[in-house]
Image (cartoon, rainbow, N blue to C red; front, side):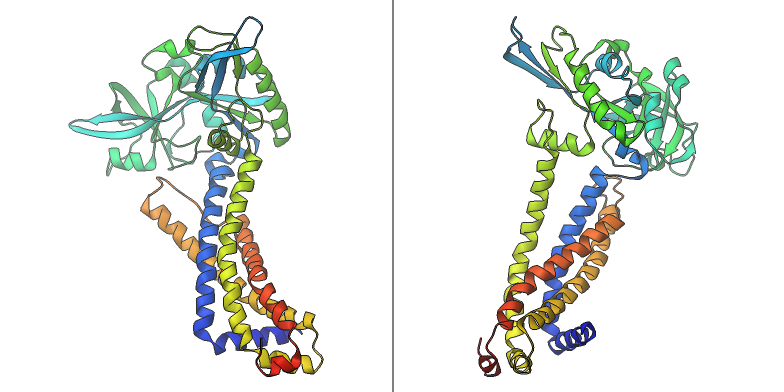
Length: 418
């Protein structure tokens, strides 16, 4: 029976090529948008490659403190900022449940001087643990180690694009660069990356700060990366970080009475900032995913409703065929099944075309550098989502007209009446 459904579907599609093309175009356009968004979200929140340890990594990206009275009740006065190095060193680095804790700065723009030429690049300072948590692809040279940080060596790592920009036609390793008045020796070149914790043009050890005052600051330009021994340890790390926040002592002008900070996944960090939940343990990540899923469903539903009307018109032309089949004993369920199968086949074909077009769009995004250093692909997860969306799309747009037409009275159907 399925073979007959497939042959009938092929004949129907070829009979009205323009109508089939319009249906496919509508399906492809919708799925391309959905799959490109899905691929970008997958790359951002569940990355592989340089942040391949993301399944067992958490990050602390902010500290929030509230003034309190003598009874510990909140009063006016609140301070929200990034972490200072001393907060990380005193309260996060001693965590027993974490395999490694790294202190990193947020990338900041600096000027790189080469004779009379000035380049504006993003610099991030990191400690030695950072290079053991991240999985950078080293293209030349080496990565800084604990001795570089401990001894205050003026060394730096640059990404591939910056190496070509600063030293066209020559090797970057061993060269010297002047960054805001400081001279660094380039000891390594790594592949370009865009991920939240990995992005920079230049990396240097923490000890290369012009001043050591950063070591005494509880708030500042820092974030902390926490690597668990296994994903099963993540809840324990979250709880330990939450307890550590309650032990933070007030520091005049920096930290007030009641302090909170959270160990978050990348999705949690984004959700917490987007939904304004810095003071709550629940980041709202589940709610954010639900909102994104709902928006995608609504976006898919609108074209599906249009396709319902198009499919109804197409099926109306086959009322005589439906009448004949009903007269020979075909049930409403059999007729509806055939019509739904036809629509699902069309949508799955559109899904395959949509996947190819989505990959083309992603290649264009990578080449255009609208998002610097972007590297994103249609992975098996995104492929599965795309085909699932195509299947759902086919059901949504085919079930209603199919059931309506399958319920026609044979006499009316043979006369072409709806």
